[in-house]
Length: 147
Image (cartoon, rainbow, N blue to C red; front, side, top):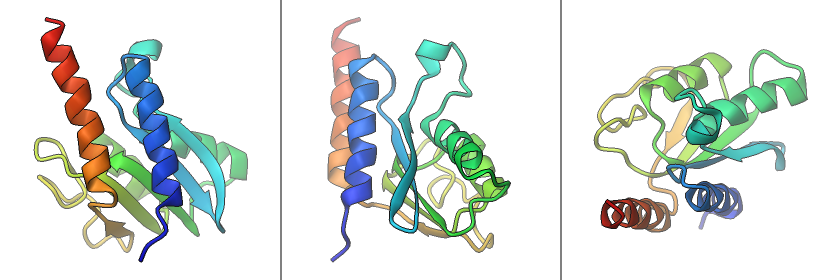
């Protein structure tokens, strides 16, 4: 059975995003069993659609490690990355990506699109899928009741 410690950390980040009114997506980047970067969506706070959890975590990890590629790293994210994030993942080259909920509308890691196919990056979906999906569903249900 897989140890979901890092996905639980990503889920904790996603919960922080939800509390802040952001779409609840969290990400954690790990190298050699150590967390290098963690974060969540900040698109509302930063007023830019570029502040997705994955992009923020990738940027922080590249700076922290002082590298151009994330070889030897694993990225954990609560929602299947979109095409923009999948492109950044492709360029930053972590060894593995683990994601929770599938995104039927914008997923780009085997869902609607597959940006990472044939890239050599291992992709594993559905990790803690029920928990990740539930957080997103609760968030959007609350938004709908507030309108």
